Length: 434
Ligand SMILES: *Cc1c(COP(=O)(O)O)cnc(C)c1O
Image 1 (cartoon, rainbow, N blue to C red):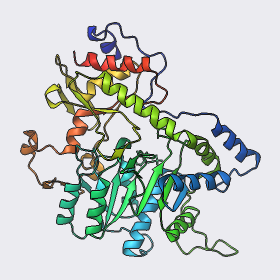
Image 2: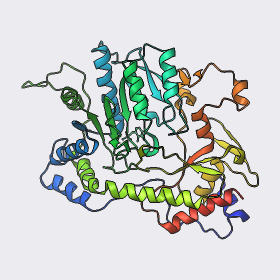
Image 3: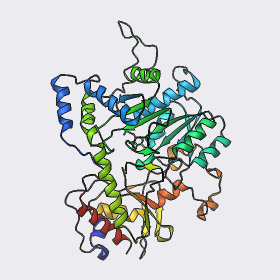
Image 4: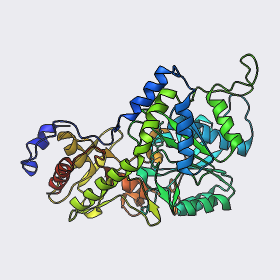
């Protein structure tokens, strides 16, 4: 990308690049984190056992309202054990070398991070992607219902709550129950968000949270598995520490993993916990300032559905169809043709980069990813792979996920962003539409 092109463009006249980069979403530390890490150091619990782990597990279960929270090394590891527990409950213990979901189809969110769906494949399963809806930018319950009509044998759903906004949990839970399927909630991005007063991560048979560096609160890297089953919580703890049996030597009856949370990172998380509310408040302010500041432009913010209290983790915009300039995205790069009064995600993201601020495209839908090109994809109209390209090219039946990916983007949403910095970002976006 040619930065100079933007810095010398008369539309951006008078806007100076940021001296310090404005991040998409970076860790926000407060001080207590260091105290708990130091405590781990001084008491020599520099391991995967210790008081910090016990405390963050307790606080997480209490916050989510579930019975058990198991601290693990990442959100992805938590998802892996969640789908493995679900797979074993559904299909029993597999032959060694085959996953618990071997050869089984699993319904998965389509527009999401690949970490939502990869664990299904770790277990030998075959993700079938369910299209997105505009109301929440999450899994479309109508498409999910259609999925069960096409694939009645499916027994597992993996659902992500994107950008801190809950999916239509009541409808999805009801559909899961109707078809006798288990539900795994990927609440990696939505910790602290509620649907009808109940926390995300609390609706599924299993849930997970991530504390990766850019999430609403962080430990630098770890995750949590959520469940109401003591047996499953115990099993996840055992699997995560190499599946040692109760014996005087290393005795193994099941496959093991090194997935347990560290007492040091748990210390960081313990120090962050009291600030969850504050982070959500700051993110909400950022969201509302964007909403206000972008008024009059042909864009809308990511949706805040009724019945939801999101955690506002990420502020995103969707550009009106009529206000999109031409944009072509190949597998590795994007190009656009500038037009007065119009813009596109490629232009806005490049302009933000030129002014030293970090935006991000919307998650590219999984069914568009080369790795998953052979997997099923279901829209509310049926088999999403079955339509002719000509029809799609006419722009008539673009799937919601593809459409949001084409027209949407994530704006810098860092807690520590000042009002002045945000005003400048708003000015850059406004200039793109001149
Ligand atoms: C961050 C994230 C994950 C993975 O969490 P890690 O802790 O980074 O492994 C999974 N799903 C979604 C939707 C995420 O945003």
